Image (cartoon, rainbow, N blue to C red; front, side, top):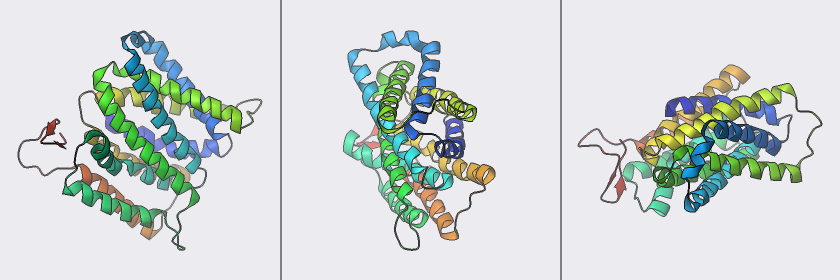
Length: 290
């Protein structure tokens, strides 16, 4: 199910890029997350009764990190390609172990540290132009990657403590409200919303938001943040594939090398040698991957 989520997310980069080229960014995010919230309220709204005040607050914090991720990513998509956005976003997979040290006191092993180095080099090859400056959009997308990594960490902490679907509703509602508020301040809403924008918002809202985050929050009640991040490493691969098939995007040879290094870093940061007993629990202060 997590791999299916990664595939759906990878397929949305081209769609969202084409949509925000003609429609205000935050207005699009508002429609997307409002539709997602409405769908989950219709299906699982009764589960909100299982949330206490502490879990509602946790859902708000999760929603803030998610809003930051999508706001940065969607703005960045206006200034860079869908393929590059997918890979830079995927860097969150190696940011997760770093945040695990800071927030969860879980120390990554040597493989994780080497993965960070490989991915950093790959990111440089992917995003730096001939003048050794990063594209404007790439910096926004990188900010989104940090927010998405924080989102995975916080969900791994709070989802097992409460009803995961109810927590999902709260976080998506927060993103919808914040997106709507920002859109009213920063953009003039068009008199009518084009049909293709409704279709794009419907696809991303129902499948890539409501279903995807319901699955992620539910699955993370029984697995680790790093295991989730490992599977999400497939997302940038799907993004490049759909960028090639749907938008005819191409990457330079050095950018392709950068993509390979980022993906290698992602996998190296999370995979463990197939020796000894594996566990999804903490062992001597370190998180092991099932």
